[in-house]
Length: 339
Image (cartoon, rainbow, N blue to C red; front, side, top):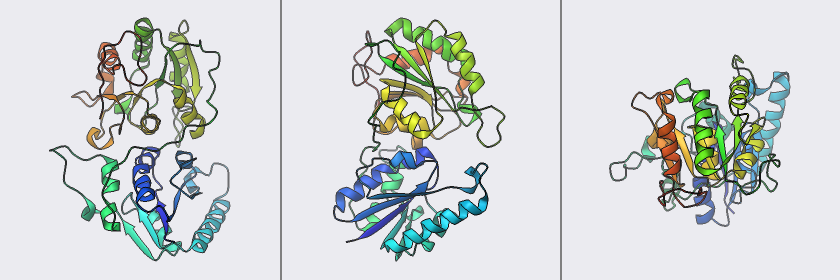
């Protein structure tokens, strides 16, 4: 039996976009053992993934909080020893030449290490730049397998998160207001105006997602103040707060939504993995490479590459343009946008 370890230690969206590659491996090598090594930060992305036998994780030292660095590195050593005992035939690094990922691959003693590089690039399709999913799946031929780029794979939690007091029978729209890059942030007042206009047009209720914490936190800046402002502006609307304290909470909350409005980032890829139609904002980021994969979506990227330049009418029109497919809203034109 072939033993394969996939190492992906970067951001949430990167790992979500690796799940089609994992699915292709499982589909083409049904008898192989396929494991993954990720960080504690993003391991929930692979929880319940049917294509993996085991998910190993480790903590990055910068995420240790009040814990000592020694304790973190001792746990990491135990993880390395566990990986060595698995005797992997192959370690695959879909994220490319990252020094720490290569170091893990060597430490785990894999007989062969395959790292995504320029040699794995495939030609743009019909003049369109390739998506991150396609870049990952371009590794398949180097492994002697057929190229394919399947859908994302993300397991929805068995028990949905919070918001039970929301009125039954209403369409439910997720609003995720946090974005790491300043160019990706839509102003609080516009989110409030959009919520009011969307509620008037569709009768929707809303789940409000954000990264908890203070804006000046040097490691994990949060949007508590922005969320408080938005809740105050929308106090007369059915808007339920859902602070994303943990990644499982965010996934569970997004799974409840019929549609999601958010900026490019981890939450956008999670929503796409859950099959949610999306309106997504792109600022200074590569929309061709990182657009939602495999779901109906309306992508808005102003010429200025500043999300703050998007108007409420523009966002509402994009939202209503998603049509009568999954997540359809009352009164919309029967037209879909997406892949």
